[in-house]
Length: 254
Image (cartoon, rainbow, N blue to C red; front, side, top):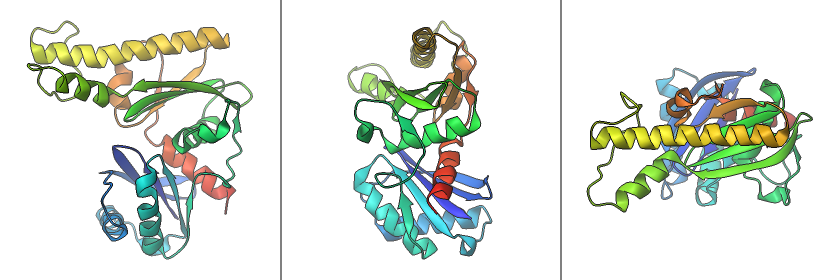
């Protein structure tokens, strides 16, 4: 049994995996000032609340795009499991063929998503990860990571708009009752959510044209479950894609 940790700019996903199965996953806020002891206490609480015995843990693996908290989380994981924790990065075997200009620039989250996507779905493949930023990764029919796109995330777009206007209120990012809003809140919900869905549809169509074939499309991340049902393309929702990728990479490096 392993502890898998996905560190994003806004949230950290904690998962417990055994024999290719995800026993549970929980989401906590990314806290730049939290100590290793505080993170370790959160791990303990997550295991207790999900009824899983942490004494069975044999190791841990971390993917992080927030360098300032990586060290604290690594120490927390090692304190919690009393064993070394892997961090996805240089020196870690992934088996991924990265075909961008500078492979070292590819974020560990995109690497892990791609490893899981290649293992789980038919190629060619587009992987959409909807976190603080919305990223699109393109994988060709041979499993090569061709590149991708980075778009401002849904919540980032919302927060930026609200902070720069005087009369627009902060809203819950939930589907609107109708496409054409009848009041300010409905107009914001429709514009932000359908606007992002339309952008994703447009990018998928353009990628398919550029690749010369229709790609399988998989979406993951915090707001994927809200946005993808509004899209017109067929998109597979996989909330556990990162954890699946971390499991695969852990097994490659045992």
